[in-house]
Amino acid sequence: MKSGPRRPVHGQAGFTLIELVIVMGILAGFLVMLVQLVDSGLRMFGEGELGQQLADRTSHAQRIIAAELQALRGSSTGRDRDSPGDRLLVQSLPIGLPPRPEHKATQVQVLRASIHLSAARELALLDGFLAAQIHKESPTLDDATVDAKVAEKKLVEPLRGIGNMLLVPWRQQGADDAILELRVGWFLPGQVVPNGPDRWIDPFEVAVPGSPDLPGLLVYSITMPLLQDLLHVEFLFWAQQTRSWDSRSGGESGGLGPERIWDSARAGLLVDAQSGGVFALDRGIRSLGDTTDDIQPHAILVRCVVAQPADQAAEGLLASELDADATSLILLDGGRFPGPVDGGWVKVGGEWMIYDERLGDELRGLRRGQRGTKAISHAAGVRAHVGHTVEFVVPVPHAKDDWNG
Image (cartoon, rainbow, N blue to C red; front, side):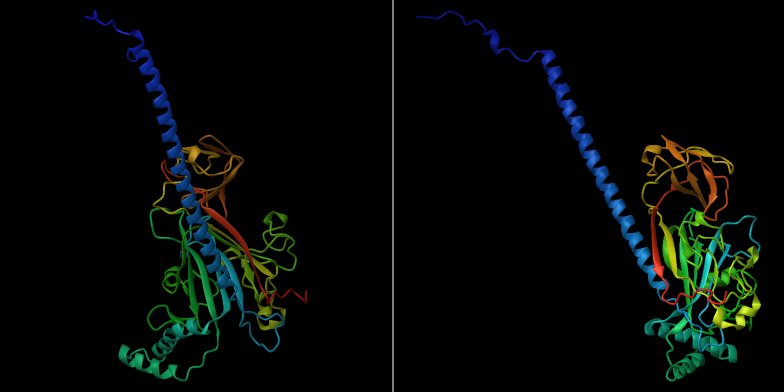
């Protein structure tokens, strides 16, 4: 028996257009959420990697600086000495030690100190020390003869385990004036360096680095980078009257806060800005011959700011030109700026600033020319740096107060 034609069953029809649109919308929403989740994860991973990299570099900087300062040498009694052979001298001088610094030039601390030398470091310095002595005595000798005499003298030259150190922040070569390097030079006691034809100078006998006796170019040539890619290096010294590391608790020198400059011999050097600052504990030139009244700090606080690597995206970029007297700045993307909402530190070019608050892309309440820098104008598009800051204290075992004062 033949059956008639089958009628279509309405329940088996396909999706309607509206249903397809709804499904596609739901899938698109899930896709957007997935992309955002992956992007957020990648961003967090990248920030974590960058944060760990900065933390590692900061920890490395702390270890290196602490090791150098722990080598400082000094006497807590002054007995059995007739000269300040363990002097600590810290001056605030224009960066780069130019012969004629500009008005209100950025200042850095130049540290010269007596140190303990390891045998390996002293042996590495001995060749240069002996060669300089031979050249000074016989300037016409050829290099081969000098090398032979150096090898002969090394056989009988005793190792004393003491020396001197020169530590100075310097602008690192590159397009960004914000980046610094910390340069160091190690020397044997009495070691001299050439400063022109037939002229030799002991870097630790010169009163003021940057003067004709020890020009900035010579300082650069006798030092080497100890640390690079820094934004700031600062030393604070706990003196006998210091009660807090907070510099606002006392004057720049002689108050209840720490000292920023130091002369353990108190020998009349640090008496004006040209010599590197005014030291409240200075006693005048007569103190140079009296080693019993030398003073040494109890501890040194180091404040170091490590810069974000140059190959990473900038922490911030100026959206417009910043005048030297402006009290606010605008960033291209304030949301990416890691500074706190309630204020913080920022470095643009060679100038440090403090801001009171961040509102979106704007930093407000700028206090210009901080940390010894100069307030200057900055062009649009310049990097705004924050970096990673570390503070640590290095105790000074040979601390000595002013027992006679």
